[in-house]
Length: 196
Image (tube, rainbow, N blue to C red; front, side, top):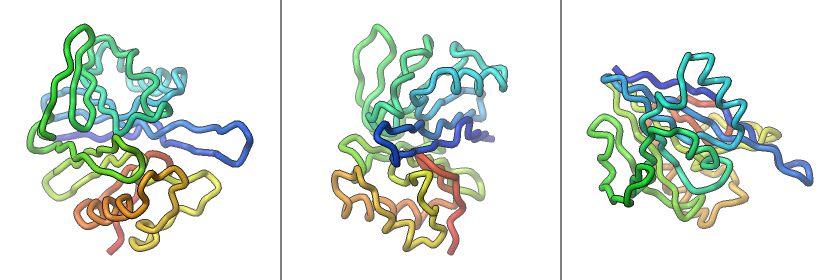
């Protein structure tokens, strides 16, 4: 059985001259006990406190998955000495060369899917459990802390992303995710259940 634990619920606040944000960080523990940390973020003390609360050391993390290359999601990737860093199409372990993968790096139950819209390097995880599909989406879905987080599918698809490089492609990616996932963990904001 896979365990999905949202360690940090991401917050984005772009209302001030100096932005304040940190991303959602999720820990996925596979049935064999492997630990995949998704988007370690940029707030070191917050992340270490959340890991410490669960009695997890940085050396226990075997994989760090990065949904995209923005610094608020990736800055702390290097603090995990034993981790293999995985992106939408590549993986690397410290001191070794970069390897390509086809999206099945984590096997059949956890799929890596490359996408587009928010950034040039978007990807997300789809986790296929027996009766539930969870998407860890990064910033394919995100809300500013001053936004109302939508609950209707159409409003979620159309929600503005001021940083999107291609909003039409982003809307299509969102639609694809929402047609198959039951539960979505966004890059900033509250996880949500898909309401039909």
